[in-house]
Length: 186
Length: 392
Image 1: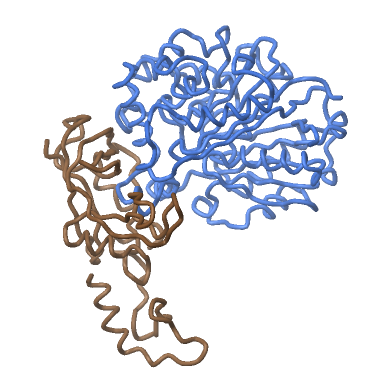
Image 2 (image 1 turned 180 degrees about the vertical axis):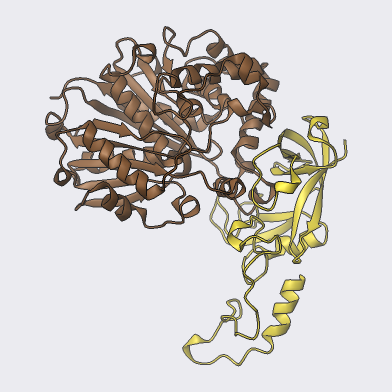
């Protein structure tokens, strides 16, 4: 459980008992009481939440929070359809092929090969200006039919090559959120 | 279905403009009424406003009634905004076409307006980034240049396409832009040698391989067949349209060099028009990056897969070649105000078919013209086919 989720879970026990037509269900948390979550006007990166590409990851904000929990444990994961077997990327809440909502979580390989790459040498978004230059690429994960886009760290962009080996790594944002990148291990 | 034609069109200057979104709506209204003296405000029953990201770039929502007010229009049948990122303008035209063809409108204006230059380039880049799948592709810093750079890398790897062939496309479109006073780079010249010295933005793409952040607006008037002759004796008849979308997250792009969605949209549009790609005399296609135009030559079938670089190098897409591509100056030469681009391209085809453009970019005796926009990471392709001819 993430720090954010822990904090929210702990504070939920202090919520007043729900009653009447506004009663919340087990899966739909009630609106935040004012003592629970102080307004955070900005994401940890310093930009407003909706100018920050890193998603809101908590279980109160997304139904694929499991992805971020598993990423904190060092594993890239996604959903597979229980009915038709389709493997998805990114993880989903409904299957695009057969429209079933019964999906299972599955870990993905942590290694892959670069299909294509480039680098951002200018024109980075807010909060990423100091990362320039950085490499990005499409990576064919080993053993599964998935090609995943991501940042590629580990060596300068002009030393990367198509076909080069990478592995998945997770990293933490200062506010407790998590995300993934690739690292060149060629 | 009723026949529909473009009967008038106008653009504002494109560039880094000292003006707001709202002021450009006024400018394009004035330009449109100046371009078509027979047009009266009360003729226009519907307005379609192509605008990709006014919330991000101008902090303005609900832009359709704002545009109507600023342009001096009072639409009483259909008023709406169309949003399809880089194809928002063409979406406005397609929606107006559908409305008129179906009998819900008789005379409609399709306008595209985009303000993109902000005091903070990083904020503008963030706005461009959210065209992608923001939660999965966005956090890696993905905007359009690195995606299209990967297309170029794969095209070079698979087919031996060269940086000089990319520069050939950009040099052609910049040369055409030197004939278009409303183009962002009207007064700047770029030959291949100069383009090769510009800095890399996203390797292998250099600055001159990328279209710009641009402020601008464009508008056309579309009319039902029985209303056409009131405005013009050289309309551009809409003969076909097609569109296809097959993915959004970059993971689902498949081959980066085979744009199957474009081939499929083109087939639909050409079949509707009852013609083949060889019948197209002049085309405005989406050169958001030099590599895009090369892949598009191939996907349309003007040349075989992998031969797009040579097609440009041999002058096949220039005046005097197989088909005149991007005579307006393209997105590379004119700039790319997202919502305005598709409409400005249609204004060029309207003028080409009426033989009203400068000789240096006039396609010889054109009958059929085509407009193509891709949007996002080339995951949507939208196409219109026009035929010149007299009002009936």
